[in-house]
Amino acid sequence: GAGVSQSPSNKVTEKGKDVELRCDPISGHTALYWYRQSLGQGLEFLIYFQGNSAPDKSGLPSDRFSAERTGGSVSTLTIQRTQQEDSAVYLCASSPTSGVRETQYFGPGTRLLVL
Amino acid sequence: AQSVTQLDSQVPVFEEAPVELRCNYSSSVSVYLFWYVQYPNQGLQLLLKYLSGSTLVKGINGFEAEFNKSQTSFHLRKPSVHISDTAEYFCAVKEQAGTALIFGKGTTLSVSS
Image (tube, each protein chain N blue to C red):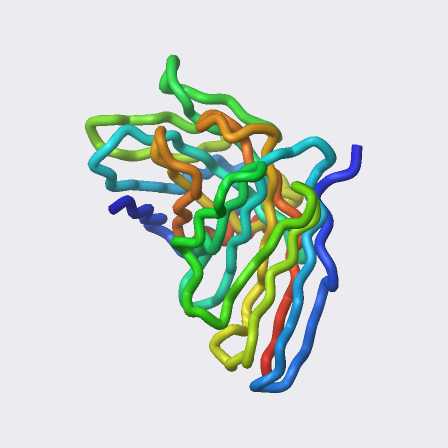
């Protein structure tokens, strides 16, 4: 079946602009995660959604970052007033349940470059 | 707080040679352990995971890993690598009561003929 999809695959923006990154999880997966992969920091957790529960935002690096998940499916990660240090690959993952033993399935990522 | 250390940033090997990618972790609570592989311009793919039971875990593509609780290690091994194994490999841990994966910085495996 279809895996996790993300769009756009690449995004180039100017410093100070806002960007939106989209994630379509695997159908039926209730849990959704955003991670950031950058050269200096490796892979970092950003935010976690599970069903209708309040999201776990503990990994968001600043208040310029926000995310929402509409209808328990598609998620959008928004970065406001982008900075050059926001340049990274943003990875989305989903899993079937919120159980601690579940496997996270990753999308191909969105490569963001802030000039 | 948990952390994951992948001791080698790059591992060059010849085709058909054995390889070991090292991973150590620190945590004050019980964790689950994972290895993911990332091929160029692709997302992360799960290779194998340790949740409980036998400490020797077998995964896809002929990889295996051994959980050593006393040494807090989860090293990845393959007895004979192929050119197609060239990729970046990430070790990750998750608290048994947690949600987020904590990743190491990755090891680039380069297999040449």
